[in-house]
Image (cartoon, rainbow, N blue to C red):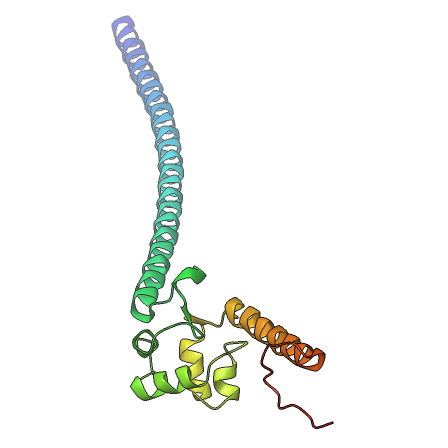
Length: 190
């Protein structure tokens, strides 16, 4: 019986060892699974954060591109509008109503030869809005050309008018004093 006992004890020991080994392998595998799961989770969270960053960067880039495109489109639209209407920001490119030729005035939108002649005949203008107040152009025509015209006051006209007034005044004074200069006014009988 000793041999039977010894065999059964050996069998029990072998069974216990194999179970113990299986359990330790299982716990090692479990901890490996847990560490793998943790690693997978950290990789997933890192991947998610990377995707969010990439999405954010893409959105920022899209905004930058969109705003640059919008600004470029606005600039191109302004250039096109200025080219079509002939509108330039500088006043040196504007047509002066008091000194422009009939042909220059005819280049304005909505102004033909007849209207250009009316503008020439209505001179001098103290302000460009006198085109409407003098009934030379309609309000809608004026709205089309108001940014392209200017009415400079003629400085030479003012000074020549003043000098002719002075000449007339001096002529009348000299005639009353008996000077040899001719007067522009008829002499009054005495």
